[in-house]
Amino acid sequence: MTSSTLTKQIDIAAGRLDLSLTEGAERLDELLTFASRLNPRRGYLFVSKVLGKHVPVLPSKMDAIHAELADTLCLAGRIPYVVGMAETAIGLGAGVARHLGRRTTLAVYQHTTRFLVPQPWLRIREAHSHADTMHIAHLNDESAALAAESRDLVLVDDEISTGKTLAQLARELLNTELLAHVTDLHIVSLVSWLTDEARAALLAELPSHVEVHFVQLMAGTFTFTPDPDYRAELPEHVDTDFCATLVAEGRPSTPLPIEQDGLFGKVLGLDDEPWPAGIQECQALYSELYRDPEITGPLAVYGMGEYLDAPFRLALTLESLGHDVRFQSSTRSPIAVGDDIAAKLDMPALGQSGRDGKRHFLYNPDAKRHPLAFSGTGEPAMHAALSSAHWAYSRTISAKVEENA
Image (cartoon, rainbow, N blue to C red):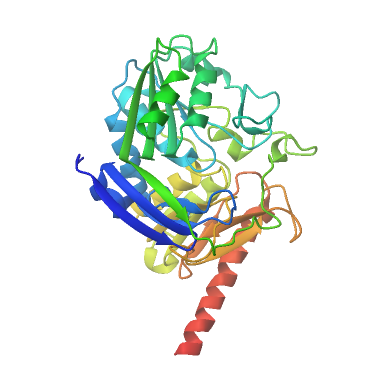
């Protein structure tokens, strides 16, 4: 990584971003693009090109980024406990943990959540607010036993701005009896915007006996100048609540796929990971009956919300078999179409139904691809809604092409 400073001005509908990049500046075009939020409190959005969220990504590119971050970490012990931040960094955290597990034999992975879970282990709240912003569930027995041996706590986020939420999460975790043996905290991100003052404030929140390491692919600072003519309002049906699907009456008694993908912890290492229900059948289908990429055509594998890692692994497997595939996932974040957001699909939020409930979104869909969508919540209507939205968009694009022919 270079140490030279790059300054750059980015104009978006919401205003102007002035960037000053001090680390990894040469990777700006590789890692980021930019958009405008539909949020009056913050107009800008840094859009990752390698996260698999707002932009479709080649699975092997995502995997390479996961491996690069993992390889940069210098661990103090042999079993890292890795936590991915909901919702955008859940897949990133799992990928980093997977590569760490392959390097050290075992890693424990867990992610924070906006799902309601019975008796959360930890509740994270915004500063100066009594409202919970995310929860951490109690680890399952296998994950807890291994995490108790860990000397390394690894917190993974896609982007760090103030570091306040990470500092609170780190402090809460390090104060638990379970993690009493942790000596090193690793704060991992794709991009860090921490100023010297913000970094000092973050460190001041943490126990003095823990050594803190910052790992990122790109770093710098920025300022934002709003455009006074830009008017943003949260959409009427934006989803700001916790999802009650996992605690709802009548839900299946067996664990749902999303409950097996890091919500309560999972151990990653050298052994092959089992495929969850739904994805297992799809993996078998496209590995055998539909193995020929010329028959299937281009594919788009869609995770939904916090259910990212298993669909990503499917996409990576399909790519390794020769399929033309991209991966991305839906989100609750409302973003304006324009800038580098070419199009938007919307669908019911998990646990919702109909047009009057809360909505989630998927951005920059590729109309020429066949969608394979997975909700992870045992609600077929959810992934069917995303697939239907994709096909409707595809028909609209085809009609426009025919009109202009």
